[in-house]
Image 1 (cartoon, rainbow, N blue to C red):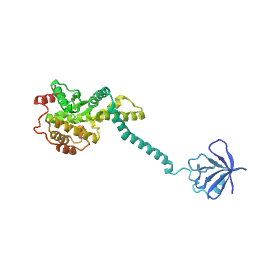
Image 2: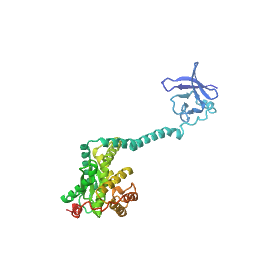
Image 3: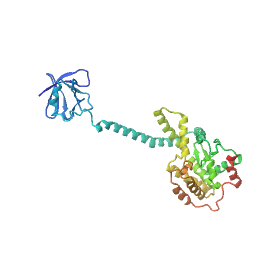
Image 4: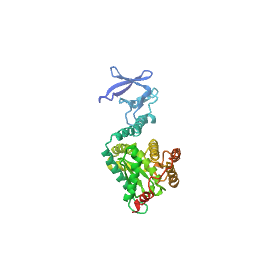
Length: 366
């Protein structure tokens, strides 16, 4: 039997008196004395809320539309119940409610992953190749100052500072100059910092920081030369600059989200990344290959570097104080095997004289 109701199409405020009837599969809504207003599939008709004492009975189609029906007599609900299987389902199922959220959320996560893992690294490589030398040098100076500040205080309670000693600095400068000569990346600024951490890292703007702990653990100048050659390899491929740009881009995006966009925050992030070893497996392999080539070109035995890597790994393991180039990738054993596979130069000598090596070791004790 026809049921009287009030119909609103959701587009205008006006309500229309209508009658409701079923044609087998649909609820047919007909204006009083006029044409059919709408057809609602019976399977989609449901209550907007559970009926209660004194409350009007309102119906809707599905869960997305704006159309509404209000029964003129709540008792007429009994005429609809046999035809509408979802009549009492006042809310969408969990999946239907959360599906748009999950879909949009997944798309957002995928976009962020693509941005951070593909787009930013690709752009960083292109920017690193085009960045002016003066700007790169300025960034390198800021990162170096930030790193010294991040290192805090050494074990004996003395404040971390750059080590002095004219003879030792001259010996280091000469060694770095000879190692890097075939690559044309000179001049390289190298400093020794009075920290007991076993580490060394390259910075943007042709800078290398060596920590006292690394010099203390090296048994000869060839081991130190091997580490320096590795860092020169990073400089030749501009890995530090690329990491800095990637970190700056990522920090900028995060800062925009969190409301913290400052140059100091970006530089601090770069410093922490370089201290902890931020390069990819491929970048480390590149630096290894270049470093070995530079050592052989200077008549140095790469096996000395392999000895150093094995000894430091055995001594420090994966502790935070261990050399950053040992920390994760490629595995030390893989690198050692590759280094030992290189031919040993005949009559390999030492890169520094005994006096020069002693001067380097004394730089932080003055």
